[in-house]
Image (cartoon, rainbow, N blue to C red):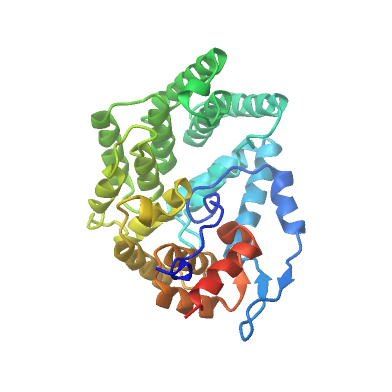
Length: 359
């Protein structure tokens, strides 16, 4: 088979911060994103030039996160609790399907490259929040979420044999503290969907056995069947690098297609895209089904028609699946618009597009 029959293997990208699994940004970093200027690059003859573009829904989410982060930085705990309560009651989502309550907690996080002094500052803010609002589900979940991140920060992202003795000690200690906050708030009202998600991340770090983890997952999905971050967390737990075997996350994901009040194949597409970052090509290296992922993206296009990010992610996966006809159609819709956190850079976008139009 000729080399051009396959799409290019480009750099692996971070998970989209808004579609799938977000990385916490500090306020300065968020504002810095808005200062970057789009660039225009000429491409293949007859095709529109590549235009680095921002998604209007992404911009709306940035503004929401900036607002929330400012409340947090100013320790306005009453306003934070009121905002979270409103979001939970409304079960609101943005125009790309991202849950507002998820974005609320993501806006509070500390970047991994921050110095220890910044992590300690965050710790004091959470301690003050707990003192001021001792029965707040929002404060407890936020503190547990922070401690879970702080634990992974101490451990590092490498394999187990690269973790120092002190790293393991802090990892275990901080996860235990996070568990304490979750245990204390188990009966708080109102319930919060993020309570289960933080506990699932905690469970992966504490190496819960499969039966206990699955019980937690089923409890979470019974509470909020459409909260697709649970499915991403479960699939991550089942990766061979963590607690699963080859083929397990793919099989487990198919069991969710017909969950009552769930999202159908949208969940499948969300998870495949999220886990795509662990592979050079998820469709070649795993048992992930392109027909099911494609069906899920078609549902998302119907449900969130204004999302340029979903269109872009769909196009990129179509390239990885070597679905040239669909990829070309989606590139036609994009019209040269490129979102950097989907494609990485303009060279990647051009390489994929060149492959799609090579026949």
